[in-house]
Length: 615
Image (cartoon, rainbow, N blue to C red):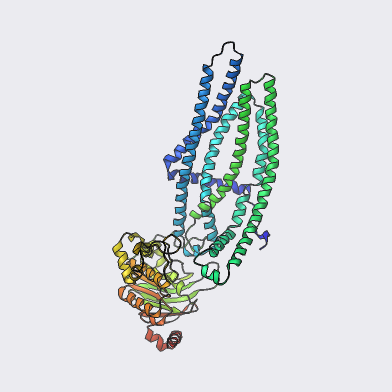
């Protein structure tokens, strides 16, 4: 891949400054995390900001008092001891306040980091499946979550910025009182720093943003190359060398861009710093000459040189930190833009139902579901996955979906579950379009097990309870679900029973066979007393006998409930009340097993082919 394609696009100063509008909202979130800690931090910083000029002034008085006592005929040390004790007290107070500020910074940062991560998780759950499957959305998600710790640093930087502004104001007041001309030299000494920071403003963010997708690829390559999930294929196909080389190549390209940026910043930074240092020593020479001329006391010299040096450092830090703040605020913009995403079919669209007032779901389904001339194509695609699909799923009916791979079976399930909205046509529940119902309440009416169900690296109890997580502490309900799915046979073989950690990710975890995992997954469907149950090939890892037993058991245990079953085993689907055959995204035929066999079309052909395989 050519390096040219990864060169960052420069973020303009206008764009950088525009992101500062998010700072008040950002601090509003921080204050809500822990108001007591937040205000304690602010008070500590305000007091700390007044201490530097106070200590410099007391230091000046100490030097002047020492000179006075040296030249006095009779020495009186009381005033000197008092000033030294005062300076000691200020030094101790400064240290204690600094430690308390650091402590409250850390606590606030940790709490805010936790809170913002929780918000990202909850926001992700609110978004539609089409957004979650959109690469542009994943770029937004990546930028929103990658700077969790960076936002904590931003908080500290902004508070420090406010603290330093108070320090600068107090030191400037002292310098102006003694030598107003020093302000001109002070400005000259910090101009190079300002120029340097403006020159490189936003460059790090630009590089990181332009590489969002490549960083995700690096994370993926790192996962694939070092994961128990992919280990078998990686070893079998000898992929480790290829993956390592691809990772190394991509990483090296990012490194080259980062090195080039770092080199430029170092060269220009050194050049401007030399100019700044020369201006500082010009001011220092001026103070020395005026002290030698008797226009300033030794104490004044100490105060002015110390104040000027601190002012220069603080002002340089102020502008450097300001650049860092504007750059980090660009990430803050990504974070808030992610939180403000509207749910809809695409990241840049608002669902047609988003602003509609939601209707309450019927307490009991009376008629069932109806697909009316439904068509669907994925975002950014012109190909229809399904088209002109019309059928009814009657209340209490067991409907099986059959068809070759890519026929549209799983897409119909996603549409029924409101994971997607139809591109055309509509889906009704008891005569009402399903998008008029609240999605959360609507989803609660379904118990669903997908073919690619998640194997959570949690305890066995939690793996079953995710079907109705509010019942996690209800052991009786969990046990009943395990009995119904035959998962109890698996549990009896595990040393820690329901408390057994599953998976290999954590210590003492135990992995299960595909068939064992599917029994656990089936138990999730039984956890929820749902009106509608959907099984999307959840028993593919079971042998024919076990699958037949599982489905027969399922039919008997869900008497009176509506169910949709997808399976490639025709011996299983024949137990359904009706079977719908899909081909090329359209309904080819629908009816009972006997009716479809009599039709002599695709179902009959596939059934006979499969049956021949068992002969």
